[in-house]
Image (cartoon, rainbow, N blue to C red):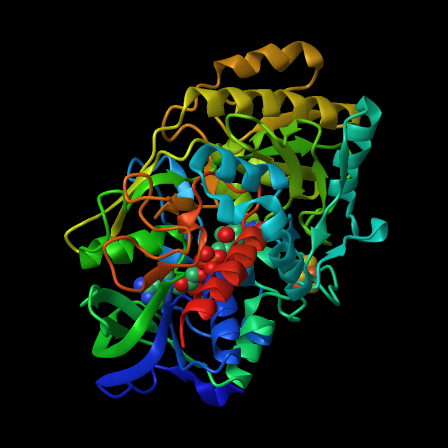
Length: 510
Ligand SMILES: Cc1cc2nc3c(=O)[nH]c(=O)nc-3n(C[C@H](O)[C@H](O)[C@H](O)COP(=O)(O)OP(=O)(O)OC[C@H]3O[C@@H](n4cnc5c(N)ncnc54)[C@H](O)[C@@H]3O)c2cc1C
Ligand code: SF4
């Protein structure tokens, strides 16, 4: 299999490669498209700037894994440094380092795309077969009761005590041994992510995958043959090394919403809406401290979700409200997202065994922007809206209520002012959290938009087939096309949309 995965850091490809289709990015969007298009007999080349890491190379060591598996080694942020932007950078993309939650895009979201944006091609009935196909690719299965670890059980217990709706989640793990390090890769390859599903299938059908190959520019975007200018990277992915180009009739960007915008902007192609309407869906971590050890670092980190407060068919937004999901991080990420320093930070981390943590997820308005610096780096600008802050505050209060009902001694959101909530009477103190930049550990793992699908160039940056306006067959097949936040989680929606757009493209090309 590895014969067609070419590591460009070991051997620079010839100066010019040709292919019918060049795909940038090997994650959920890109690998799915590579599979479908190669299966139909097309000559496909996939460019991936990350390396190929699987099995025992995923060592569970934080010091090495963020460096190898995350974009900007996990240190990417918005321009004001208020929100950490987490993205995968590895063969297989974000699926390699994600939490494996399988959440199908709710019908309400596709209905919203139809009713608000006129995108009838995405109406729920038309998308249903693609959602089913995505669930099949992911081997989606329910997390079993016995796989819910003690920390997630605490969330479940508290929610049930309060009568709140919630359930164990679906996931794409098969043969999981509960080692707990999903966010830095699974050393026993238990995740049915693109690295183990779409990529092997695409390779079987002859697709070529080039790793440590960074696309830096697309030239001749309005011509029949496009030139994708590529820089190889050194084995650690730090420095650009040598150049080559791929000539292709079709170029598909699936580099993640931020990177797909970045490449279009660096190339100076597309209409003025490229880089606009970006959703970051900032999430907030929250920690509950229990008297007894929960050892939440054992078992599946994220397995139970409280969905009581989700509004799945919001007329204005399609999906709104918020959800509360159990989570656990490795010590580095837990200490890094805590808002404490010095002795207090030490004291908190000494209670690592006694923690249960949750992520508070709320969809947002898609009005962030991506620009590029002179050096071609993405500059991500985002104004955190009051409506989102208000829902996060409400989520803090509800999560605290739930954990207190489950027996927690105290609950702390990763935000300043630092409030240790030990009783219901303290819930009003949450109003003091104003989410000023750099006062909360906000994380974005679900970036969307930036090359919004629109029925005309006035309404979007790409047409409903993903064809970027003002180009000749340059496409986006990732979440950059999403006109509004698809759901709490993005892996399943992206695979769904990539299947859909791949089929539409196949119907048009010879
Ligand atoms: C920590 C974390 C946890 C998450 N948990 C979940 C979860 O539990 N469930 C869920 O549904 N979603 C989750 N997500 C989100 C989900 O994983 C992503 O939305 C999804 O993987 C994105 O797919 P994609 O194909 O658009 O991009 P990616 O998977 O990010 O793939 C894009 C690839 O393109 C490469 N690339 C970028 N620029 C270039 C370039 N110029 N040239 C060549 N290659 C390039 C990158 O290296 C990357 O590998 C999580 C995300 C993160 C970061
Ligand atoms: S919890 Fe399961 S899927 Fe996650 S790293 Fe451990 S064994 Fe792999």
